[in-house]
Image (cartoon, rainbow, N blue to C red; front, side, top):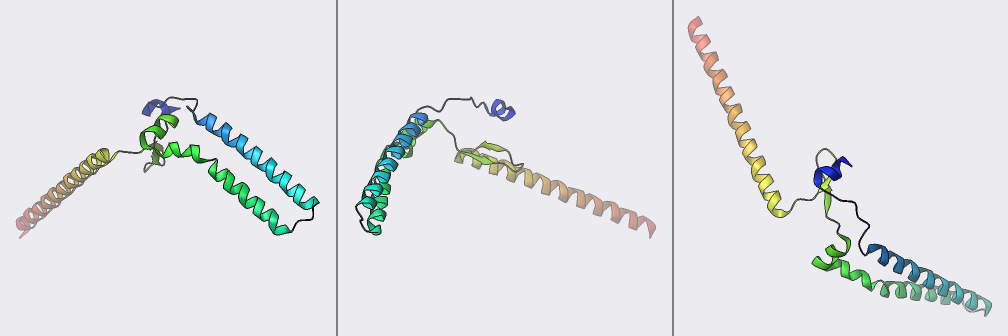
Amino acid sequence: SAARIRYGVQRRRGGFLPYFLLYDAVVLVLIAAALAANAAVATARGRPSWLLWCYAYYAKLTWALLSLPYLVFTVPLLGRALHRARPTGYDKEGQLVPMLSSALMKAKMARDQQRRRAAELQAERLSVARDDDGAAGRSSLV
């Protein structure tokens, strides 16, 4: 719940997705019932076993064709409006966070590169300062 507050995510009911799931469940039950009925009739009439596998293939094909309404989720703007889900990923700490857009990724990479350069410059200054202190100490001992 802290992550929801941090990233401004609201809990929703799923938009149109529950209706799609209900449609899919009804289609699955109807196809399974038709497959079972065909298998029972074929077995009762003594049909060959390969015919049962054909019925199973046609049931799978019918289910695939009746799943075409799910293609609307692949349309970029329409799919996002239907399910309202945002792409997510994991950060270095293992927290689930929203994915960065390409512009945000470029800005983050530039910021990280600046931080690395600043750290390298500071490390270089420290090593030069240590070398100067060491040289001054040696010259006074000689």
